[in-house]
Length: 141
Image 1 (cartoon, one colour):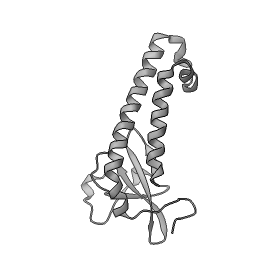
Image 2 (cartoon, helix red, strand yellow):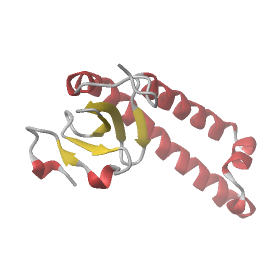
Image 3 (cartoon, helix red, strand yellow):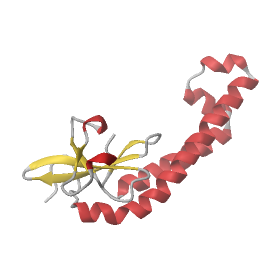
């Protein structure tokens, strides 16, 4: 039964089944983020006055930026359409709501991990990850 806050609650097995798809999406999302940073740097290097512009202003000036941002938004929406929560593109973090003995926590996956190895409280975040039962502790932080 989903919680009031989340549309879906996962089991570790259900979350692990999504990891192959998430790996592909996260890799593409990170590549697009790199393209976006590079395009912004080139745009502001070409016109120093744009260095103080906000991102929305830059997107209005550059169709390329808008295209990259739209692709990123589409990939992020696809990740979240599975019912998980995209937390950080750079670190490649995705959380899965999980009912742990009546308390909703997040199963936590980081790009590069072949399967779930950790969880954290909703308030705790990545820095407070704890190993899942049976997962080697040496992989955390």
